[in-house]
Image 1: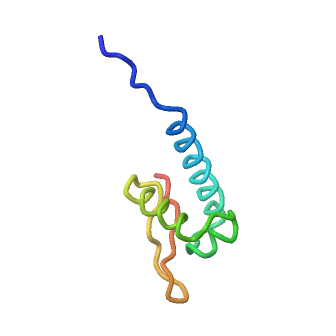
Image 2 (image 1 turned 45 degrees about the vertical axis):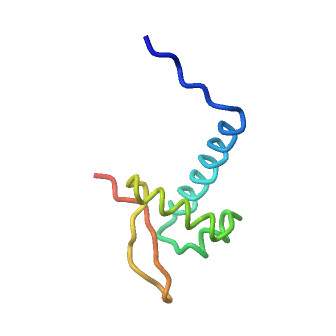
Image 3 (image 1 turned 135 degrees about the vertical axis):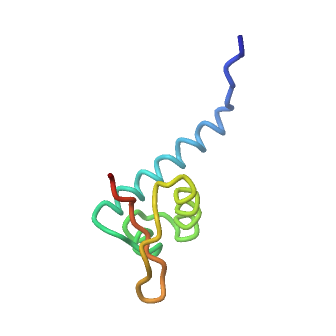
Length: 81
């Protein structure tokens, strides 16, 4: 039988914080599509960090690019089927 993978407390805290921030981003986007700047203002998360989260979330299908507005990329939540 395989052993359970052990995660250091530091890594566990990092994962927890990342999930918390991504949940804030999803909540901010429930009112409609948003730019990185808009999400940053709504959540209080730095723009560079919002962008990193959106890139990862897009790779996992959690957000999508919806177009552009004022020369900025607009992200949205995928439509539920």
